[in-house]
Length: 362
Image 1 (cartoon, rainbow, N blue to C red):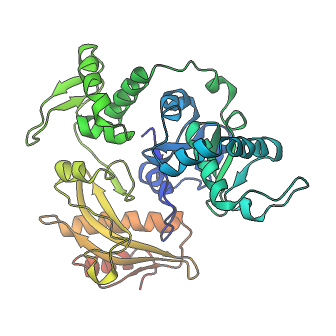
Image 2 (image 1 turned 120 degrees about the horizontal axis):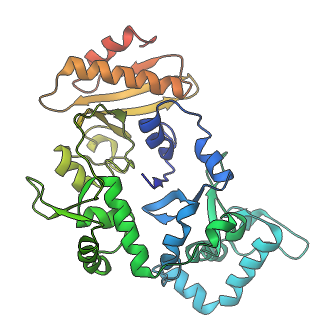
Image 3 (image 1 turned 90 degrees about the horizontal axis):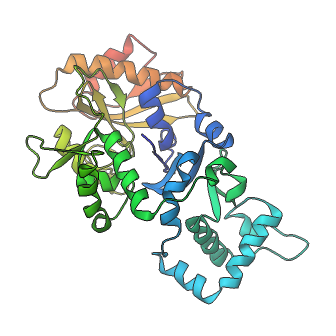
């Protein structure tokens, strides 16, 4: 994937854990923290806030050097540049901080800075790459520290490529992650702006680093990575986070799978069509169903608050596979007191029956 998008919603599990479960199955849930602690991952603005390999730090330096788009950043840097430098010096002297420390911490020199300006200064330094971020495992807060204390020295020593070369490399990597993609798919992956990337696509095709293609039913030209292959069959089975690369680009999801998907967290409950935290279910090379999931950690149960199938599916086959995936997820999350299926959705009755032979369900 090259990127793990970060999101704070924890109704089921932190969203960044789900893409790993989708690809690896049950695995140690400390995997991201361990990789961060060992210097393999850091956080930066890539596809939104994301975990990315420290080995790729050099590919984002052009973004770190670009002007701030947020007005609050620009104003603070223009009006109080000395203050921003003081924030940096305090982190250098006193060690890593989270934004909440700006209100609470007292020291022999003076209290910490004003919270609002301090938070903006930390974020500005984070954008510039002078501070680097990672997540604190117990409360998910972003920790800010000096970049040289987070990124291994061998990665910081990598030469900084010109912006257009870094952008081209990111487009090629996006093509590798996609297999086949439109221009807009490629730019969206690392949230690059379209105008500076348009001439780069032609260069990449001419260099043989991308292959131009047509996809039946697509209105726009497509591009393949040169190493892309067409598998004889796809045997995937996975529940996908709303922020999984397979489905985070809603237009691409609809174009590839005929599956219209919208996250309804911010939709008032009476207006939700499928539920609060809905995960699409990938089976083979199709998205065949969707389930609204919640972890009842106190009762140690996995709650299936709705279950809907797509038109034309083999319901019994889909439900059996979905039951297996839900059982695996519940075990992975330590929700070992059963899976509770609510009556909402056309698949709910069959799913409840299928789960009754696998786990204690209600």
